[in-house]
Length: 221
Image 1 (cartoon, rainbow, N blue to C red):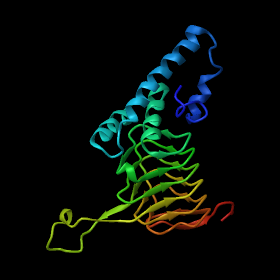
Image 2: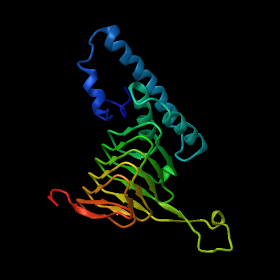
Image 3: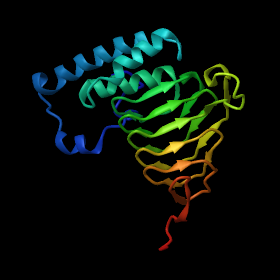
Image 4: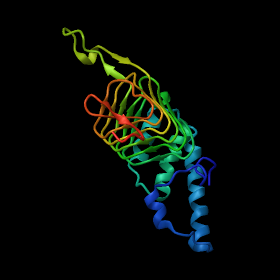
């Protein structure tokens, strides 16, 4: 297996691990399929090393891997694509239908999990720390349309972009929205459906529209 996608560097879904059981040590049942899979992944890695993040070819490949199943070589191929072409750490898992725009501005730490349908637009830098869980259909967007001039079409007024930083050990619940310029502190929890318009302190749980502090992690409130 390629170094990037070896068992020490690839993150598997926990529910899949429950069904795998002990590996088949036979040549036909275990060793041969593994060798063939490693060979195929090696070929994919060679292809991905030639891609420039954000290029037309990169986006075409992203569409392909985004629509692959979430198991076996397909999931490994998708993780390999991002781990090879982006500034990305180890043990990445990416579900289908995840899409990243301006990937050249992304930094992803170790042991990060993207659930199905997450959407990231990184017009300005987006930094995701270690051990981060990103729920289904989360939107992270570091750019906004300008609209102040009512005598000009909004689509002709350009964008304003601000850096987003997501700290270590953060959980972002499904359908949450992270807006430009936001810093989410280490250990914070963003409730499902929240729209984050202000920075979030470390180990703080926020919820609502706009997101407000509910409690701190470990508290009974």
